[in-house]
Length: 124
Image 1 (cartoon, rainbow, N blue to C red):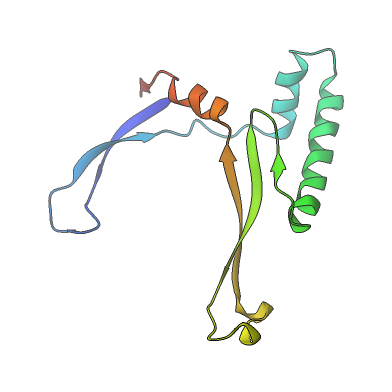
Image 2: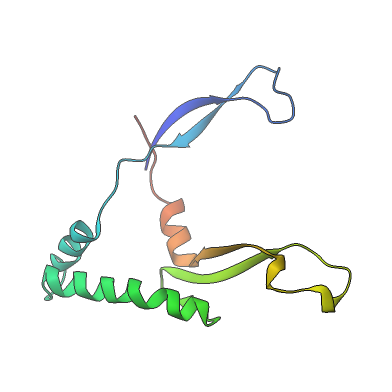
């Protein structure tokens, strides 16, 4: 994992001298085509087969989430929806109009977390 050292001011005291922190450095984006090509190199399936499978997965994922399912993806982790709403004084006053935001929550598996935590850091 690549990192840089960056100054950051304290949110509690903006006038204080900044402290320096490790900040992960994004190396760019990998698109579906590139991901499928990498996976195909490790399997007997073609890049097209993998890309088709991943595209179909992405097409179906919202349907399961909207139906209220948590989608558990093996050693990768779990996706689920979370609602944020305004409060009302009584249950009768609550309606869809109270909805403020729908978020997708990703919870990584313990195996994925461990893999990331044990990845050596490399300063840029």
